[in-house]
Amino acid sequence: MNWKRASIAAAAAAPVIGLFAWGLTRDPNNIPSPLPGRQAPSFALAVFAPGQGGVARPIGDTVRLADLRGKVVVLNFWASWCLACRDEHAALSAVAATYEGQPVQFLGVLYNDVPDKGTAWIAEMGGQSYPSVNDPGSRVAIDYGLYGVPETFFLDADGRVAFKNTGPVSAGMVRLKVDSLIAAHAKSGGAK
Amino acid sequence: MIARVWTRAAMAAATVLLLAGTAMAQAPALPAAPRSAPQDSGALRVRVQGTLTDAQKNDATLESATKSVASQLRCPVCQGLSIQDSPSELSQQMRTVVKEQLAEGKSPQEVRDYFISKYGEWILLEPQAHGFNMVVYALPALLVIGGAVFLIFIVKKWTAAPAAPTATGAGAPTDDDDAS
Image (cartoon, rainbow over all chains, first blue to last red):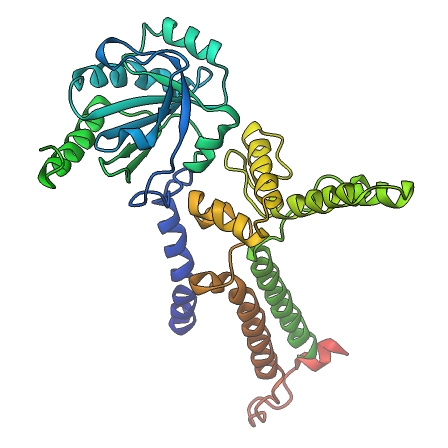
């Protein structure tokens, strides 16, 4: 065996193998968003599903992000045709209900869908504790760099995007993010 | 001997061509051509009818600029398609945003920057030629040059004059005999 040639071949192949190995560790569907850390894009969207209890908003009421300053905002993009949205709905709705009375606003945003189908879907799923708004033409979705549903954005009390989750959320994850943002807001003196 | 040298040279050339081909395949693809042919544009209608107003000419220009920018933006819900070529609803909505922003007076670069600020540079089908992205543009050329240098080196080595035959080797059959 020619050891010199074998070592040259191995040295040439090593970077290629290393590159492929690194590629295998990455999820090609996970596209990093440039939004976290930046001011969240503003919006003013009409409510089509009111939500329940103290957080309910009348149908047709306009929700403006600017009016939610001082609250942690959980913005969940969903659609009635989205199967993964079914997986997270019960947990998200239940967690949202536990934050009633706290400086937190959960908001659903209907993506590429019609409000009637959204309303029927919510009824089929047993209700939704927080209000949902419609996003005609997906303008807000594009502003948030959406490429699928469900996607959930966690905005801090200063209106900045703190975190984005692609795919279904779990109750534990939502609590962790929301609690940390409430704590950060309280620490900065915002909750006085 | 000559036949063997040329066989090896041909094999080396094929290897370099294969490397070059692979490298070129890795080069960023040019933006996909708009699905609609230029004949569909308003510009043709202007020429045929000859009576269109400035507003209609502006429409044709806007349409052309929209197609150009949309051809450079990746469809977020497709595999390797531009928003110009994708029939998906999100792509149609993104094309509308492109058109509206151009109509508002934004430059094509400003429209691209808007989408980059939302989706990151991933949204561009062709990476911008700066920073680490330059590797994508430089690597194919470097591989071709490196392959050519390697080929020249190896062919020179193979075609170099053989060492003088030793006394014991005299009279032994050579490759030249095979080649004749």
